[in-house]
Length: 321
Length: 289
Image (cartoon, rainbow over all chains, first blue to last red; front, side, top):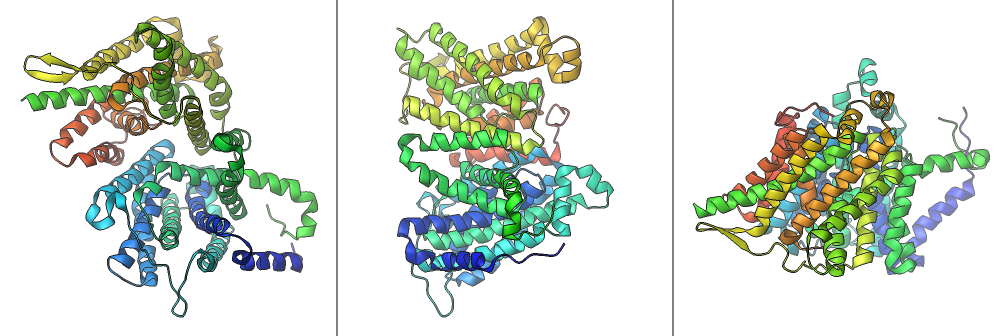
């Protein structure tokens, strides 16, 4: 089918909105948007293992913590350049992904979620107690941002552009992978692992690859996060936070990149919007999540796609399943 | 010598708590195939109902308060089973159901916070103090925990073997279609199972009140280690739950003698990961899920 061009003005409008955002919003909204970009990167990574491949991964907080703390230790204690720390994070992500991938070969479903919970809790307990390296509960402070050779970032407003750049790159890579043969192989494992094996897909290799992709995304997001908040401590990287990421994945739309972005946006922004409800906002938010989990388990994005189908000609979507 | 006996008793006591937690989620898993990630909230709810409501309303902290808590939790279990567990157990992918129970846990915790307030409190005089056995001083709470836990385990086995409902539960756990063909109302039976499991959660909640004080996060580590205990013992089997719980409880307390106490929580997870990699069937080599 021929690909129709999206109306030009829509893309230009979106681009302008993204580029000029820091000039129009106050510091609070800017912080929320920055946090949202980091959440998008993490959820895109989680999508590979839990969304496409169907292996429940609750260790995201632990991997994220490893990324943030490694970046923090390398840039503060050792004083290395932020970009070299990011390269180390890539290596760390690959290492963690492979080591978490191997248990996933022998375990499935509930056992794997327990193992990832165990991994995340061990990471958190080690970070809290190895004080000479990580600062313990006091945490790491004065973490420098990823500065460009010609420009030093001064705060949330300009750091937003670096985060936007990384997010766009992450989205493009994720989009390419999800819609490729590799992505379809991941999806086949979730649907029926034995059938995929019978078709010649190496399930074990793919599972490890999925975990590695998820770890890479989470570690890099950890490094960006450490630079953004300047101060990190172990209380951020808990199991409920990992459950938040699963929520973003499930609510937005499992498996599709726009769904992930939608889910991350909803779960990050909705609690802030619901604050007007006072003491009850968290309860309302969680009840909404549970209702959606029971009624719309595949996420909101497939529903939206179906609802917009009659007008899809306007948006110029490519015809694909 | 005194040290070792105290460590053993403490280990046994907390081990039995983990066994009870493992038993209650095994109950739900065998009946519905769901893993109840919300059991932490059930335990906290039981503790709050006991310490927050019934102890305040009734003149003394007697058996009546405990029985009222159990009855309330049983009703709550039936409600949750009808509204949430029944739709969740028919989901296409296991990850969806796990996510549903995680959200249920958060909602329950929020309701507890809104109903009783976020400030932790203690139930005065409940199972405080110590018992002297010869020259050894043991916390009274530990002794009661062991006695009650053993009683619950024995009662559960008797229930399964002797009563019609218990036998029906075993049938539903083995094969739901065959059980339905035999005339067993599977949904109703699952409701009863969840009610029973909630009652056990309430017992766990009441028992850990002297150990942890009544607060929103009192059962977080207990619940997680209960999962570990069940997996280590043999996931899906009741003897496995007991064996696994006692093993982890004892290892935890013995571990304090050898390395810094802050790493106590790591023991349970490390043992579980070891068992998962080396012997996934657990100690009693139960059938895998």
